[in-house]
Image 1 (cartoon, helix red, strand yellow):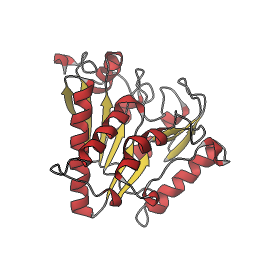
Image 2: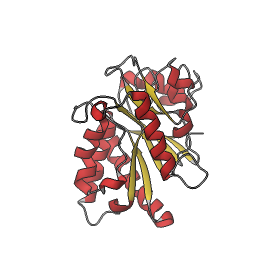
Image 3: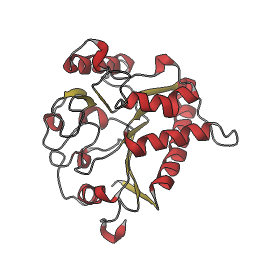
Amino acid sequence: MPDVVVEPDADRLARAAASALVARLAAAQTVHGTASVVLTGGGIGTAVLERVAGLAREPEREQVDWTTVDVWWGDDRFVPADDEERNELGARRALLDVVGVPAERVHAMPASDAGTEPEDAAAWYAGQLADAAPEGEALPRFDVLLLGMGPEGHVASIFPESPAASDERTVVAVRDCPKPPPTRISLGFSAINTAEEVWLLVSGAAKAPAVARALEGGAGPLQLPAAGVHGRRATRWLLDADAAGELSGGG
């Protein structure tokens, strides 16, 4: 069963998630010597990264060695590299440039001005994942994979009833998204669900119906992609009170 954590508001949700992420990455470094995180975009995802950067400035806090953290993305918008819509750009500003993650450990998805079609960009990113994986595996270890969720239940760039929802490849090109920009690159379920832990960060009353359907068995992954994601060791829904508002018992 998923773990469900409800915080009073979006600000406290971001702070709690940031503290938990720092602790989880530090623990992974203790065990493996390195850590790996898959980032998401969106308002709450970026707010978490900003607060992680703030924690890095507090020497009394538990610390992550950011020189040994590999950073991947669950999805990104297939727009030019300097476009404000890019998840990569937001993450660099909020965290990666602040804490000094080495360039070779930042594994960004290709932008549209890289000179490739989205399908080729997806295949290239799948190759990058395979190159970083242990021998015989298609994917590296993901210690924590962060996801946001849309009001209709999309995660990464897997939208309800879209071809990506049934695509078995690790990385897919997504065209004609119902939410702009229409062209994106996304991890597929086959990659997302290999993560040690998947954390869904969800804020706002508009998302409460989809949260309730996903957690209470109201739909399958084709109709509600958020219902189809899970971690190998843990699946955590980190909600604010508004997003939890339609859960049985109020969350």
